[in-house]
Length: 490
Image (cartoon, rainbow, N blue to C red; front, top):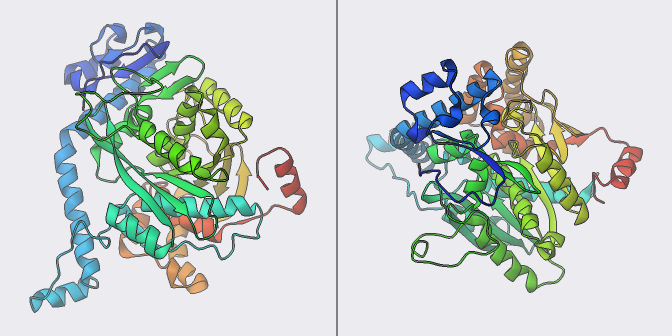
């Protein structure tokens, strides 16, 4: 993990945690010492009042640094373990399952998977192997445009976890759309390419639609988890406090902050470009070719956080032309990214440019409930929350139920809900067909969910099911009311 030392002139205040500079003794002192944390070399915060009290804030700093230190320590073993798991899963896939693999091994005819092939799936991809986009019920239902964009956005967000060959094959051969490109992007703080996204053009149903899909947190990627658990923040004038780990992944420049433009130098010529600057330039080129074209931004988990921060930085740089062409932001299982001031900033710009923002949340998914919305964390959600319960019934809300995920208080109800989801796994394919058959890996995750409710709920499977099977209780009057106040576009 790279040093957090950077040009911070773009922000009025900040709190940056530097776990690589924090010893075990320092960790203990965070909780038990009365000295200001501002005097420590592992916390960079000019306003010491922000990190003195309450004690819960020290706990936040302690846990964030502890988790990041653990992730730094286990980065290589975690990646190695993840590669081994993925290889084993794909070895079964290319040989027709476990028993066929066993038989082929006995007769020396087992096939080894190719990591660069379109058939090689990530851990996330093995949880849900569906490829096709299902538009069978979306076109004429409540919020038809939203339904269509939501369906394609979710499948794009899921595909973003896969390798470039998979993305190309899926977009071109299965979806019959044009792949503009799949890209790796540079994180200036981690000094490596940790952010991925791809861009497609929908030439099949909506020729004017361009989709930008950011990859979410890979299960065994410590860099992604460090971005998630890095609870550092920047307070940007006019914008508010934003999650440092997410803006760094989007393209914040360590030596420059957020300049409107960056130039190629000897320092950056040999590595991939930052996500924000490259995608902004690419979208301008694509949109200039078609005055009717629009684009939507999407992502699952970490990808959802990057998806909503992308228009935030566009607004910061006064890119009104691009914002007017932004047809919507669709996020799935997205964590919180900013404070109350950031919320007001975004509401103003999204309203001004008539950009719909839909934040899809499935049942007890724990990620949208993090970081906590309280006086310690100060992070908040905004936008239209499309909430699906475990029956895939849709509600349009301002905030998902149990917004901070009361784990202990609601443990029994959540455990019972996780048990129902296991039972539902057997019912769905009987009712809706084999496309809803869940594999052994996801069933294992369902079992884990009995002990850690909310973990399997974050998997893409239930979000895909929600976009396909989701139904609402909205009457015609409700639809008219929502459209009148701008929550659901016509």
